[in-house]
Length: 193
Length: 221
Image (cartoon, each protein chain N blue to C red):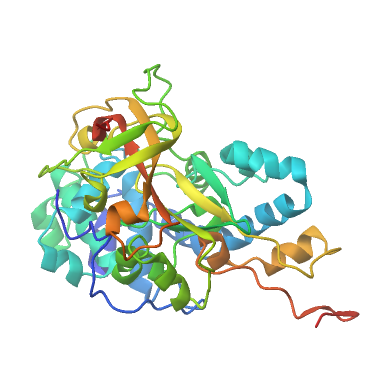
């Protein structure tokens, strides 16, 4: 690996500073905190949510989240009747601008093989129970569309600010393998049962 | 190709490691493999469909026995040699035999890389191509078997679904992966009832949505 990198640097095919910048971008800067802002806005601003579901690419670009592996976005909404789950059975397609790089499990054979075949079993493996009367929709993102799940806003979050809500939203809930949990403790003065 | 990468519906792959704190990279070489692959792609000598095919077009034991970033590295090495950016001898020795091809532009510096990432490279095309199907139409996913690159998963081939939405006109990967042009055509989200894919063991409510191009589909009988 070091030999390959040295060879490509010596041949001036790559700029070493750019390699470090690429790693820093996707390890430290771009990540699920971006997607969480989009979700929190959709939870608090009905007009934004309408734009997000109609033209996700443009609505997400309002935050400046654009570009590679998020060029053409689709947002699918979880409701009391529908639970959405995203996979790429052929490789590892994933919406980088809003979620960063995919977790190892998303790229792994166990998830890719079973998400389409037994989504309810996969969800249980993540500790997520979806009742029989809820429809599970699996999105196999094998083309150049990239999918983000808009999770349901949990109960007990009324009155929370957009920033407080964003802090509740997890990466896994935006892939659809989990739900956003009701916060046990919202703040020092507000404790929920 | 009917390769080991097309694993939707397979059994026996074991449990999922669901740890939410599992790091994105497990070793420094994985970071370097990731960055080298992106950086080398900036030369424009290959496209994303060629990249995928270079990772997938290998013996199943090689594919399944390689970690994710090992596959990226193997794909990168294959493409770099095939497109003349490095020679097989250079890869083996780690020493340059000569300079990079003279017509290459210098590799992008960090500000240029940041701009390239923000811009991305959409596969959506402005070509005006009429759609062959409309929303709610029943379609059959063709039973395509090709030794070349394709993005129609095996589990939906020969199955009937319903057009959920038309995404618009996109590059067709089956030709683009082999340097045979973009063949602009519509790509649709097609809804397959889980029971039509997996039988009665599946929930009667559930569905799998697959993004499929015009050339993968015909009107359902």
